[in-house]
Length: 396
Image 1 (tube, rainbow, N blue to C red):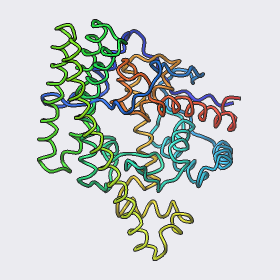
Image 2: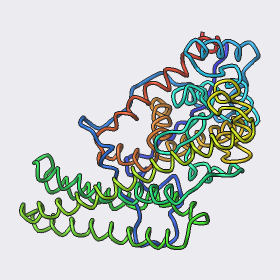
Image 3: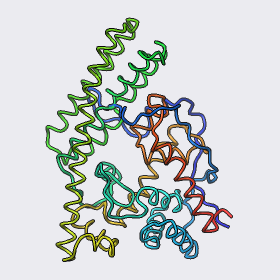
Image 4: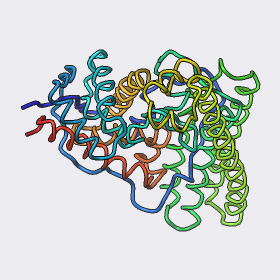
């Protein structure tokens, strides 16, 4: 019987605000970056995550899968309509073994299945690509080598996504006060959290700076200054007792700014995704001399490696498996630095993979009440990991 271990409990880090100042090194002096994705907010209480049994705490690498275990996991994934299940298990388990990952292959495979059902050529409406749906910024930050398809639309959409977050935070707090859901002391406490979070995500934009025109970071700094101004203005209104007329006017202006940023994000990412798919198909047609749809249906892994070399490394199954291994380790470390205990570490690692640090920090601190997709992800991924291990004989 196999028992995979991958969690390290971190005791003694109390508040959710531990999450606010750890995980990534703050960027070099900027007036103040970040912005809340209020559109990711939905009704409901703050997510605490489902309590599922997790592997025992341990720092040692997860044991590699035996040939029999790989075969049983592949058969189960095939039953679940995962594309190229055998190849997926092989490429992911090999990447995990070579990296000496403490995250078990079953967890990596659960991510890949949940993201795309193993489609190595997938492109999301927001332009994430590959079997584990990586963005160019995340791929670059994990240090995986290879070409990346980056356009002005991607840069502008990502800037809008990150830099609108503090505006969304201010909008969220204002609405709670106006709706009577938050007292002034509660609103002031949330405002301090928003101030602590306002630069989270700017590291992604700085990672993109070498691939962007100089104007890109100039506009990041301008948006950063505006975000700080908005939070300071809200602080002034709250300190004056939150006069309703002034707060209403403040909310109206913020909503207009936030909506404009949201529109830019969505339009730019949609254009980027369409351009990436068009380039993917063009490269496949030129290389294979066939209809791209036929190539993608019959020769996915071969096509993925061609695309990974000629267009974007995120399409390469081997490069994406390496990214997945590194990125899940990164998310696990962010959860550890947040002081999340062993019982919840697995579900919050999954949440960070899906929602990103920029949203999950807000989720845990109460600025965002619920993100439905992330909430569902926190349940699906650990359950799939457990299912694969049961099938493989890992947990009995």
